[in-house]
Amino acid sequence: MKKYLSFFTIRFLNGLQYRAAAVAGMATQFAWGYMRIKMFLAFSKANPAAMPMEFDQLASYIWLQQAFLAFFAVWILDNEIFEEIRSGNVAYELCRPLDLYNLWFVKNLAMRLSRAVLRCFPILFIALVLPKPLSMSLPQSPASLILFLISLALGLFVSVAFCMVLYITTFFTLSPAGVRVMAISLVDFLSGGIIPLPMLPEKLLFFLELLPFASMTNTPLRVYSGHIAGTELAFSLGLQLLWLTVLVLLGRFMMKRALTRVVVQGG
Amino acid sequence: MIAVHNLCKTFRVAKRNAGLKEAWKALFRREHEIVHALEDVSFTIEDGEMIGYIGPNGAGKSSTIKILSGILTPDSGTCIVNGRVPWKERRAHVSEIGVVFGQRSQLFWDVPVIDTFELLKEVYWIPERKYKSNLDRLVALLDLKDILRTPTRQLSLGQRMRCEIAASLLHSPKILFLDEPTIGLDATAKIAVREFIKTINREQKTTVILTTHDMQDIEALTERILLIGRGRILLDGTLSDLKERYSETKTVIIKYRGDHFLLPDGAKVVERINGHATVAVNVKEVSASAVISSIVNQVEVQDISVQDISLDKLVVELYKEFLI
Picture 1 (cartoon, one colour):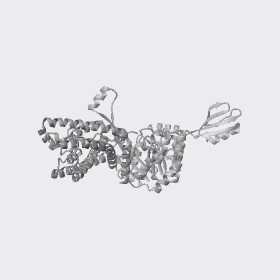
Picture 2: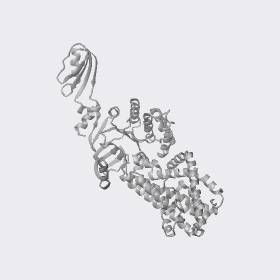
Picture 3: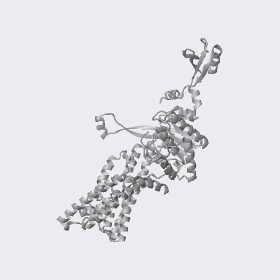
Picture 4: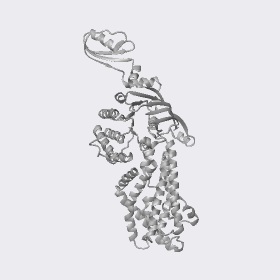
């Protein structure tokens, strides 16, 4: 375990270096979140009855989504890993007494955590002090905060497990480009990154919420705002756990296949 | 001990001709060619040996190294390294080997070299005391003191290669694979690297398997040579055997004072410029010493040297003979 922890630390500290990128990211995410809330505010003023969730729930959903973008966004991928596979430098990693799956998983966790740690607090702070109805509301109770944190962690793990599948696919396709573009655009929509999932038509929503992508972003954000509770909450958390297991098993299986038939590229 | 029996590995390589039309055709039907990287390769290597693994580009050297280090799974054949099958027990296997790929880097690009070393310490579970003593020894032998704290990106190739080699030896591996360790290095760096490899082979009894195109590496380092070509082991023997078998001519260079001299049969003058003569001796007909004593009897010799065929030429001869 300790060896993976040292990779985590190196990667985490490395990620904290990029302060300018963090400032730029915060500005973008803040502006983006503000615009979307304004947009939904306009919708809600036009026809308040058609809104599927309370407006302060929606505001929290959007602000948290922006604050923890680094946890969920599938486009945050480790180019080093793609490059290692593409160039064949993965040979060196395979010469180490390490489990490659665990190693890459840990590196991705560290990368996302360091990005999020730098960005989330200022965004959360501003989102909390904004005037109503733009502002994010505080969690309803300590219990709901804890449930949110659990769901948030699960969402992060599901996202990383999904990205692992993308990395490993590169062993077979040799170039990451196609898979990346497809996955990023699809997942962005399916996880609620473009339109919050609860705003979609109900029939579609039923299926979307069962998919792993909803488990990445949508579930924790809805848990925070109290939009899901009771048995539905237990079901959602269970679903997150299920998808995490499925994606990890799938990734491990693919990794095993890849390593037995892999051709380490280049001389 | 390394025991390899009947190892085979094939690759499928996509091919197409140049041009837009060909590229368009390849969209629908792709032509593949099966490349036999290894065909029935067998050899054994004892503990503490130092092996030169040579062959032209694309002969299968790197594939063999990759299989031996557990990265590549062969199509068929067996391979046991220290009692383990590398690709089946990869993690246990790699903790006992060290690998240097001359054309790749294992050092973190943006951080000082020592950071990579510290990380490797964790990765290999190297106990603090062993790490410290290994590091001190490597720093002294490879002269790393001044470069340990430099980020990798600012090292010269020679400095980097010394660090790469140190990185692969921190965990005291029993076997060291060196895949073209001297590629691109200048003369001083090459000599430093060679000296070091000799030292660890002698002192730590580390088995060393070296692939290289630099025949001076082989000459300086290894007794035993494995020649591979087109996926097959063509020759397995000592360097001196090889030279005896393939060098029919020796060259005698003399500096002398006096008139012409006559040579016994089997020797002839290749070049003669004011007091210097180069004589080619066919050792099958006459020995070099007989030629020398004959010359010494006729003229006053001031300086004399005897040279074998150069190893580079020898290898060219070998490749020619095996049509590779």
